[in-house]
Amino acid sequence: MLTKDALIEKSRELGFVDIGFTTAEVFESQQEVLRERHELYAWAAALDLPGGTDPKSFLEDAKSIVVLLEGYFREGFPTALERHFGRCYLDDDRVTGGGLSRRIQEFLSYLGEHGIQSATPFGLPHRLAAARAGLGTFGKNCLFYSRRAARGSSWVLPVAVVVNQEFPPDAPTSEVGCPDWCRNTCIVACPTQALKAPRKIDPRRCISYLSYYGEGITPMELREPMGLWVYGCDHCQNVCPRNQPWQAQDLPVNEKVAAKVGDFDLSRLLHMDVEHYQTRVWPHMFYMPREDPWRWKMNAARVMGNTLDERYIPDLARALEEEDDPRIAGMAAWALGRIGGPEARAALESLAERTDMNALTREEIALALGQC
Image 1 (tube, rainbow, N blue to C red):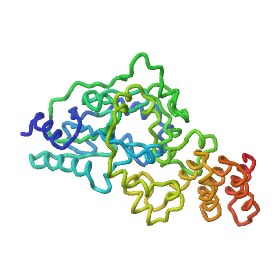
Image 2 (image 1 turned 120 degrees about the horizontal axis):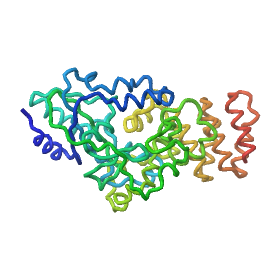
Image 3 (image 1 turned 60 degrees about the vertical axis):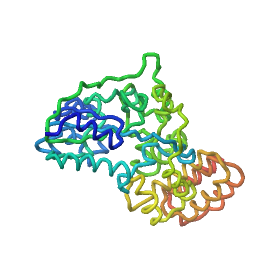
Image 4 (image 1 turned 180 degrees about the vertical axis):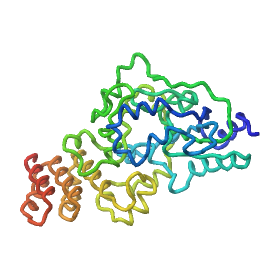
C-alpha cells in the first residue's frame, strides 16, 4: 500500500512546493457559505458549486483528499504583461499540456500504478481543502496563503486530488493568518470595493470576474476603477504585507512567458482576428468562450483609455469605426473620451453623425464627447 511519506517524496520530485492530506468529508462550512450568499453566486449556477462540496460526488469511494501546492510565481514576469494580467494566468498550461499539467498527470499515474483511483475535480473548493490539509491560512482578501512554502505568500495554487485510499489527515489551519497590525490593507485598496469585510467578497464587483465573466459592456462606474487590468487582477495581493518578502526578490524572468509578450500587446488584442485569439491567446487564458473574443477586445479598449496615452488614439478610432460589436465600439468611444484632447475629439466627432451605428455606440460617443 502506498504510504503518505512516499506521496510526499513523489510530490517533491515533481516540483510541487508542498503537499497535505485531509479527509473526504463533506465541506459543510462551504455549503453554509453558499446558502448564505446565494444571490452573490447566482451567476455560477452552471458550475454547480454546491455539488462540489461533496468529494464523493466525484469519486464514489472517496477516502481522502491529497492537496498538492503549486508555486506559480517562482520566476518573474515581463512588466509589459505583469501590469495587465494576473500572474496566475501567465504560465497556465492546463490547455496546452505543459509543465503543471504534465506534473499533475505524472502524480495521478503514480497513484494509478499503485492501485489508487483518483479524481481532480474543478468544482471542489480547492483553497478550503488546502486549509483543511494544513497547508496554510486565509487572507482577508479570501486568498490562500502558504504556511511552509513561498515565504508564506499567496502566490500558490492548490490542486486537490480525491483518492479512494485513506491517509492520515494533517491538522487543519483554516483560520485567517493576517497580522494584527495590518489595517485591512487589501480591503481598503480594492479599486472596485469588491472586498466587503475579511473573507467576504462580492464576486460580481471583482475585477477578475468582470474581466472574463461580465455580461454586456462594463458598467460606467467600474471602468476607471478597473484600471489597467485586461484579464484577472493582482491588486489585493500586490499590496498585501504578507506577500512583500516574496515580492522583494530579484527573480529571473520566465522566458516562456516572455516569448508571448507580442501576442498580448494591447493593440494586437484590440484588433485580433478569431484565428489569433484561438491559437495565441485562448490556450493560455481560457476562462472566456473560445468562439468569441469580444470581452478581450472590450477590455483592451478600456485599458487603453485608462493609460491616458495618446498613442492609442488611432487604434481606438479604428476600432470605433470598424467594430460591429457595440460593446467593443462603445468602449473604444469611452476610451477616446477618457484620453481626451483634440485628436480624440476629432475621431469621435467624425463618427458621431453616422446613422448606421448601434444605439449603444452612439450613446457612448455622445458621452465621450461630453467628457472630452
